[in-house]
Image 1 (spheres, one colour):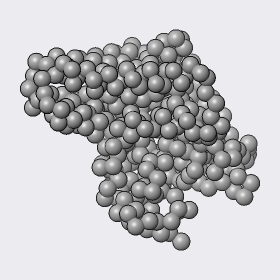
Image 2 (image 1 turned 180 degrees about the vertical axis):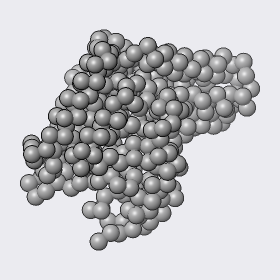
Image 3 (image 1 turned 60 degrees about the horizontal axis):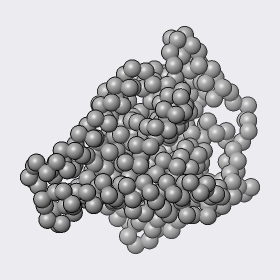
Image 4 (image 1 turned 45 degrees about the vertical axis):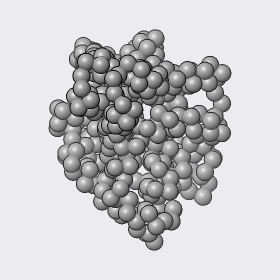
Length: 360
């Protein structure tokens, strides 16, 4: 699909206006900013410190390969955590009211292998607008030909087993991002139905910062570490499998679980509901009672609140979730949630199994 989808302008519902008014009233009553608070800046310092310290420990050449291997695992996971907790908010401009500060922390995305400019297009603009719409939301376009989540697509031979191999495949997501995805998205003529037209400086940034990442994570370790090439390769793959699994599972559990919709445009190419209701029907929360999930996942376990209020820093999602839930119930709109991470994972498995069969 290439046309721009439009949502119903109004069906007589005031859900979004109501929930937005109530959330605004909460922040005004508490007299707090919607951006980062001291706790958020503490989280930012923690995740960046662990990321940099782990990298420096690895390239210090002070440790044996057996000790560096778990460090590579930690580095991969914290690369994802920095993306969740720091870069994601910064690129959404919800980290700070100062855009220079947001750009500074968005830059860190380059150092975990991803391009912030491409991410802004594919995630902030396309995914947040066309959530779960096959052929438009490229965030759910996980592995064409391997993963099927649209009933419009025919099941091929290998997809019959996708519920078994999908999660291991997510471990390749980071490698794909570093070496393929950003380049592919950047040079596509259209992304999510939108024409791609990039400033010249973004071409330079794409190649320069990818080159910097390759130097820091491939060339420099090979130059300074006293290890064989195959030992480096094992460590590099460990890093990216850990990063890919962490990213892949968190994003999929927010949109590809039981209860979430994958709406298809009507004959005119439009969605027959308002945007906010569309977000509620295509997005899910999980493990919202877990402080570990809240701390490490950057609010991505509260995707409902994030999709309705992407300009609000994730540190506040716990405060506004009760308002969103109650307002959704008041307007008879679904609020999709799995109580735990493993319940969401099981639900994801079941929906993959469902789509592994041809549905008529």
